Length: 125
Image (cartoon, one colour):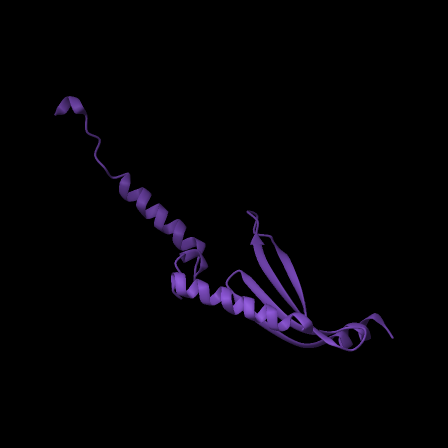
């Protein structure tokens, strides 16, 4: 069997969740013994000053024997966060439609409006 055939056999089902600069990949794969397991991959895009970019990826392998405990822990942690802080996103940076340019424009407006102050000499008072 070729390497390509093995990878086709291994990847069973996939789903993608795009969330701003992050993308989550949920992939059902097959073990050598023919059982299934889940991989969850977080891919985050980083842009360099020159416009080029790279991705950092983190992967979790989740096997059937851990599904129930994993699901219970994730649900408990999410419920805790919602109960403590509500479901509203507090940080603009984490909003789905966040754009770095909006922050830069806001800072530039603030800077330009503060530069219009009149210089006052205390000797004049």
